Image 1 (cartoon, one colour):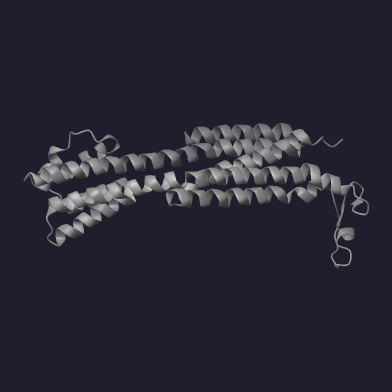
Image 2: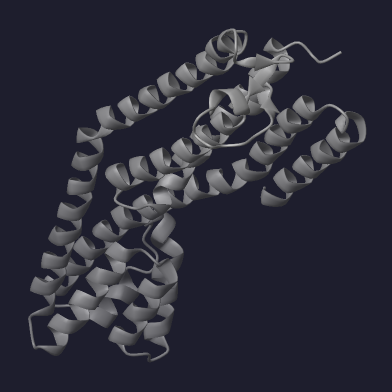
Length: 286
């Protein structure tokens, strides 16, 4: 999927450079489309990774409960894991099979569990396995430990869902505020700035004369067209989209990494809207 996106983006870029290298506005617009196509598979991968992690955590909760019941009935931990080898745990099934195979080969349960947690890579499962290992070394009852671990995972997942539901309105508000900001920037760029550029004493040859604007401040400069004057607005939108997305991810899911997908959506939207407006709303220079 990633290579298909990169290849499609490369084709669009080559087409863009060959046919529109003399048209700066079309060059930037198609370049933004190419970048979005190249980045989309990686963002989809991040979303799928998050869903996979959530699914694995839910299945590990079921696995821990079944293991606690089996051990509580008097079956040793190692034998319980081997007996659970053929049960369906969804995304976790392959990891459970590997765990039972390691135990059958004679690898200690603690070592096998650490490998199990490292293979999955979920912080929740790594924390639970570490807790189980420490409690067992301290001489605790393994069935009580497993039951407590299952309850702990259930509470963590419940709190995550409650936080996401409680803060959903803030996510929606964040997107609404950003797109309102985007609309204000577009109005300034294509309505207010062109109007002010024609005000007497501020225009020289159809553009801003920085010498006249900054007269008395000791700042020297050259005349700027409205397009040159408003170009930094795009950088402002991109910076706003980047940090707004990271903030949304941190608030909703507790991880800046999870905010990358929000940053991607906001930055690509702002770039395509800004360059598209410049392409379709501003007449081409003669």
